[in-house]
Image 1 (cartoon, one colour):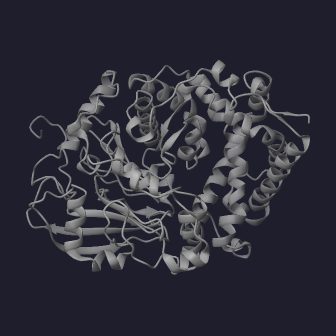
Image 2: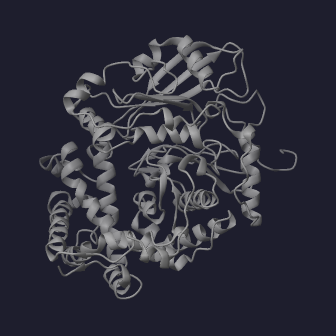
Image 3: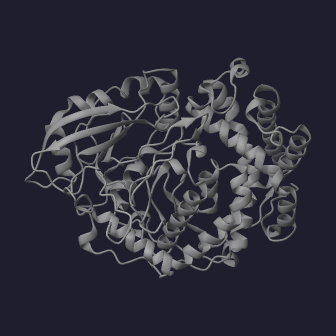
Length: 561
């Protein structure tokens, strides 16, 4: 390579692959990106018995998993400290950092053997290190649970085994008020979030059209709500020096060297946000297209198909009649939430908003329009579900922090994906908001049409039905009214819980530690900042009104009873 004047490929030190040996995933990525460059069709391939992981050859894991049930605070306090056996392996399992250390090498050996990750003639010889990642501050490692790095040593070094691992486990109910709130929200009040994430890793790892971290072990107990997820550790590259929220140090990287991690709602750390988001949209399109060809039927069951005409004749799609009082209730609820968001932007924390985003005249008009639209929010959701080609399996929250990226020899960006909470079949345009909520208004202004065009092109190339990009763009824009109202919802529920009103006068900007260092303040706050900045850049009132008079007319609830 050096003799030809080409960049040397990085043989990444990720704990797998022998010394100087190129890992298999590099060749897979190289072929995938060449197919993208050439426009080669990539329909979903058949899945052979050899592709099925050992852990799935004796029955579907979901059959062994009892239903999720909500725990009351008292029950959570009592049950979450217990170590009860998991439902898949009948093994007790660690659910905090100390236990990841204390369970020892023999536990890891048995766990990896039961999942078929570790060959029967090998074992974990030693647990070298367990390090818990920060859950607050600038480099907080996510809000859905605690995270840790694990380093192990095997009795027989194996190029197919990672020595550097990653673990995810729940918040400790007893650690703090924040931990208590998160644990109740994630493990109980919000329904079953953890079980499906683990099942996705177990059942879909070999089916996905992109790379994901290799699964080593996972387990869960419904009575305690405790769980553990252990995967390979992604070898994120070193980030350059940061000054006032910007990366000011450029670091040269070899092909296939994983780019630095980007925190949630920290897009200002991305060297090239456009390339990142276009790579993400490409992979979302691949995922949807393969599902529509039956790739994930073994997990979700058969994927039904329907036309718009059939949908409108069904009980789900039929036009509804409601009492006028119902519209009033929906509009008043929206008004209350919008008032909270507007007060936050104009009186409590105006210093973090742009001039356009806190313009009182704009906000008053926005509120008026949104209150009117909220009576028909459910009608929009029905419309987005009206034909099966717009519905497919989709990652629920594919922001830049839930993926990892690398360039090939030719400067093409490829991506892998993780964090599979709430993976399911939905009108996939609804999940675009989960992806783009961290993107700033300038980026959306420049690229929203391009993203929709790319999604449609890649969806077709990967074997999905033809989608019209203009219609996809309309469906995306129709999500904005409910999204803005939802952004306002979290001001009282999350932002003020972690940064009370009386503290905001001391917050300088979005780079202030009190903002960026508090998880939900950063996440909820940034989404609202971005939303209010982008809203006046599109005539959403006109877009929604034209839809209600045209394509949406057959879906509108009649509030006449």
